[in-house]
Amino acid sequence: MEAWRDWYDGLAKPSWTPEAGTIGMIWGVLYPIIAITHGFVFVQVLRGRLPARVALPFAVNIVANLAFTPLQFGLQNLTLAWIDILIVLASIVWSMAAVWRHHRWVAIAQLPYLAWVATATTLQTYITFSN
Image 1 (cartoon, rainbow, N blue to C red):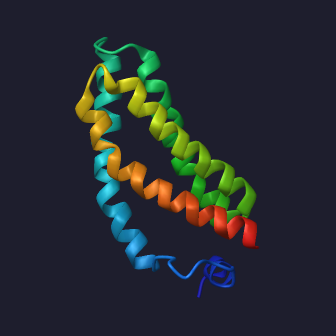
Image 2 (cartoon, one colour; image 1 turned 135 degrees about the vertical axis):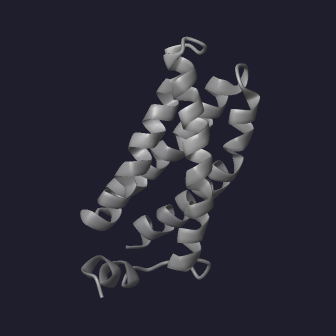
């Protein structure tokens, strides 16, 4: 077994913690949504059809999303991972607000991502403050 898995399995977690396979399946659905919506926004900005400021929260979101796994499982730093997931959550809401008046479908398509990250933030908060 990988060292990070032993570490993670040893952490106090709530009884409702999803299995790793379930989490993987959820991300398998969310990543295409993220790729399509974020990609659309970036292309529209590059074509001059959206102001660059609309893409800023999407860029922050991608960076924060990509940083979570190295922070949580690489560095095994629960506090940094918790701060990071708060940034992921806030940047989803910010993205939705920024794009709403331009392309509502992009904001609405973020709802499953928002729901999952809100759940994951609750989970991460529990793990961070219980360990």
